[in-house]
Image (tube, rainbow over all chains, first blue to last red; front, top):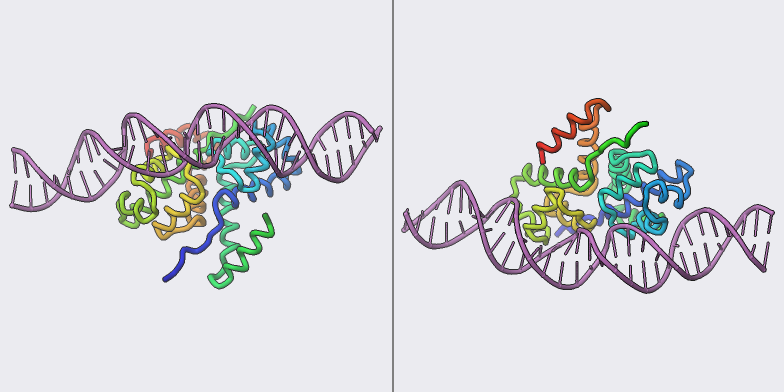
Length: 101
Length: 101
DNA sequence: CGGTCGCGTCTGCTGTGAGCGGACGCGGGC
DNA sequence: GCCCGCGTCCGCTCACAGCAGACGCGACCG
């Protein structure tokens, strides 16, 4: 019986994307949060995949980072493809993700 | 002064993807909901973008549809690209999306 | 025709978690 | 030493995630 593959969760992948883009842009968490109109503590939680942000929140933070939902979702799908090259490597992939978080 | 582009929201795009895939698979809303372990009324709301599903819910419904988060996010990003060919067409694009919903 | 069934959606509800204020640890500058 | 800004921790409130029961509708059957 095949188990469902343990794909990473949306909120983790999204958070990774957001943090990655923010760092690429050289923005601090505090200034991005301010630009997005959210609290710094909340943005911190979003980036760490601790919260399920609403669609409007995602859009606001994307706007603050001068990016868009299309780039975020594309980034997530690309990341997922990198993470899932073959079935037997799943356990190693999981460990790598845990280290990145 | 450039306004932020009125990109569709994540929950709407996700819901459209889920309904599209479900219909492609020839599954009823009721059986997909059962397979995913969610209520039919909730799946209906998800598909119509009325609710912000948790990451686990997204994963559960994806599993029930024999799809994955990578396919969903890729589908969303592709849809966004279709929807945003050029800046002046944004208002027409918005109207088209409203009709689809 | 009336009754039954399954589909998808509406309505109202409760417990949980989204989002945030205040506090904290840390490093850097003066 | 004090101050500042960074990012995160902790605790809180209220909006909403998720669902039970009800409903409208079309299809089917006797």
